[in-house]
Length: 261
Image (cartoon, helix red, strand yellow):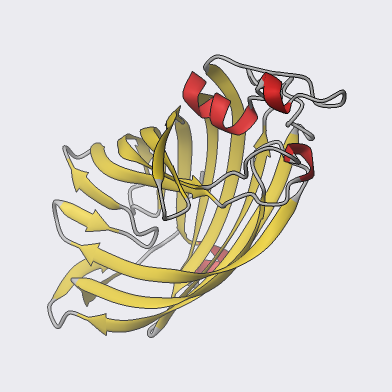
């Protein structure tokens, strides 16, 4: 990996804002149906020495020069009107939240390139906002490669991530089980234990301008070889999704700190 010349400048200790984004996502991993969502995009950056919230808006604390502990967030949208689940309960939206231990494997001298091993463990909560239920656990070890100042040294950041996914029995039951009461000729009863749940590859591109932030992502997701891959609710072995967003910086601290941008 070749090093790109970055630059250090003084930026606000914190910034906050809001915007809007659009994304197209499958109803669930392995579904052959998708939906486009238009959603609000929060923007929060905190550049403290021991606690940081970067442009990906995940709080992280520095344990050592090469080890960080952060809050890992993910989730899935509700799935209503899914053909494979006709006659079965709809899937509620899920929130995944938990800790992630991040270990720096490589940093370029100018800090413009970084390779991390990330080990997030997240609990899954399903809800339609009238009730909440625990829907299992997910472990998603991944390699994350970050580049700053790509595209001709113009301030764009590029992130690449490749991950393995492991889920427990409760998670697989929520998304992929077919109870005997819902079985049909074309949809036999199915149940799965926990274990390997596939792979995912994500590419994300973003840039902070003086008064706003823009970002976009593309994701390839595969359930090939997953313990639930034979579920009749799995209609495709892989999904491609993506999205983009813009957020305006509405407030910032008067205090400045040295930061790479």
